[in-house]
Image (tube, rainbow, N blue to C red; front, side, top):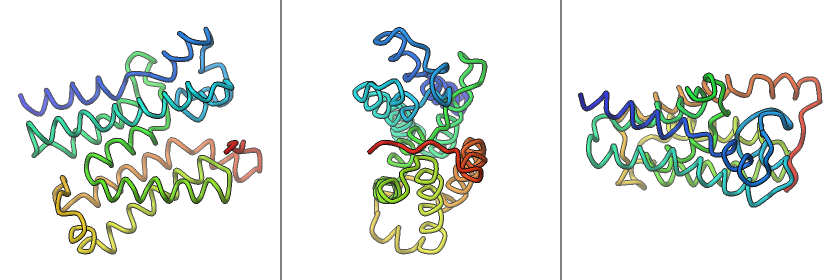
Length: 203
């Protein structure tokens, strides 16, 4: 019964399409008909409203963070399941016929709940790569890969500096799953990058 409750709550939280809701309310536009058609913050930015994009980013991070923290407090043995389900909820929301966003912000929220240092590492890496390459997709994919690699090869060091790590020793497995899914959700971006038609972000 506990695991069912965790799955339901996590999925429900992750599936809230904040980007779509905010753009509908404040611009009367459907973000799915703008730019890439994605409901995430990067595409919301293409509406020209930086405040809406920033708010979408914050809310998408929080909807990944809050359920995982709550699950840790109440049912700590299911914390990784919560992290995965909230992530999948954003990518495959029932309300939008399972056609959601790419999941990066929600992944970040779940990651911050699992390990604050790893979350900070992701943010730092993403910013550096974005400044260098100006592509959100490259920043997202390589930052998630960086977090995975650091965890795989420096697992003992991560635990030494992060005594509050919420996961089991198999955190590298859930991070690997996250990375594979992020690559999957960015498959169109990979195609665009190969064909040099990927749109850059304005920083």
